[in-house]
Length: 117
Length: 108
Image (cartoon, rainbow over all chains, first blue to last red; front, side):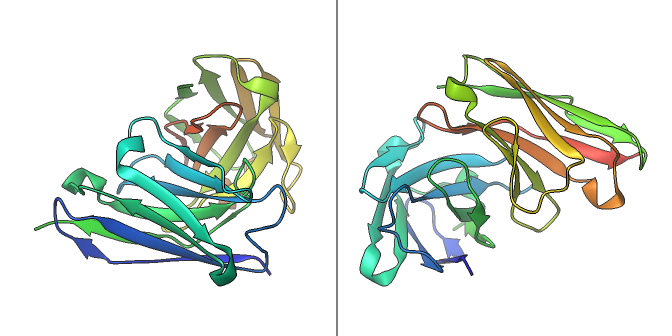
């Protein structure tokens, strides 16, 4: 069974760096034509794609957030990590990780991150 | 960056009716690389359709997708009570991938 689970802080202060971890099971991050995305959703608003990492370690980022984002993976730990620098209250959202080479077949439950002093 | 515009923002229909949701792209979507997701309150999105018209595993055949280029459609042939939700389109034909702003299908 394929599962993904997000973990990280529930509260961060403005200007801090957010680090989120997606732990996957049921598949390997080194499988060909495999990848994991991070997607977020502010309360009551639409989905926003943030970043993706492929099995060959190729990465892709949202144009508007590229300067603040870093995505990486540790295949041995089955983890994908997203860091976002200089957090702001507008970054308050539920952050999801999702599996797929392009479209997203399986999603984690999401983790709500609030940015507040 | 490809901008996806979904219409209408809200669709008010009764169970048993047909729902037609639109997703328009600011540029042609390569190889019809467009997906549709359904999201219910408090839950993660669920993949319905990929490659514009292929149903994901376990998705009932009342859901169908069509379109190419810049115009795509999700059709729900007969609404069941569990279909009232928010629907998003996503393009993955060119980086960065993008989502539409969503269409809410509500009970009339």
